[in-house]
Length: 190
Image 1 (cartoon, one colour):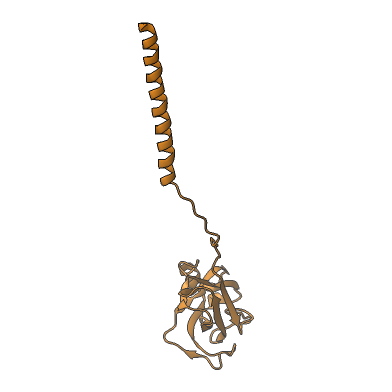
Image 2: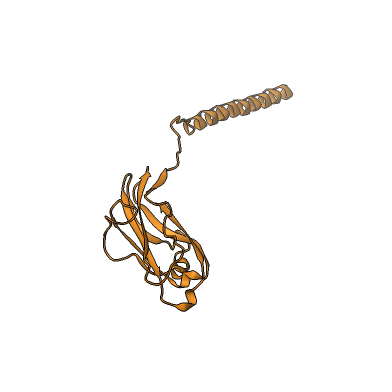
């Protein structure tokens, strides 16, 4: 009879372990539900800012001319208007290179101010020139946006500036018959 008793005892212990496992599993399931939560948001949306420059009054942003000689001043004025969805934008001008050999003889002045006539007849300077030197010097110093010549800072939508570019050849016989090409980029970035 002792054998039967041990069998019941073993069955009772086994039953106790099974019940304990069920209780632990149920508790674990209930506990994890307390630490898990979900939410969703249908309003996740991204859109890039819009930066746009409009240039009025300039067929050529800066200068062009042929038959240049010392003392002949060429100039061009243009209005740059910023349209964009963010404020605090800087407008800079930089060179994409100055090809040819005339650049070291051509003296360039860049100035900001007000006025709307492309022939600069109504231009009023807003202070000292932003740049004064040769085309070659401008290209060497201002070859990218980061090193570009600051024309205006902290522009907001609808703000505008007028830029005057003027220049003349130095009185140097070495400039005779030379030519060059100057490519300038006006760019806006926050």
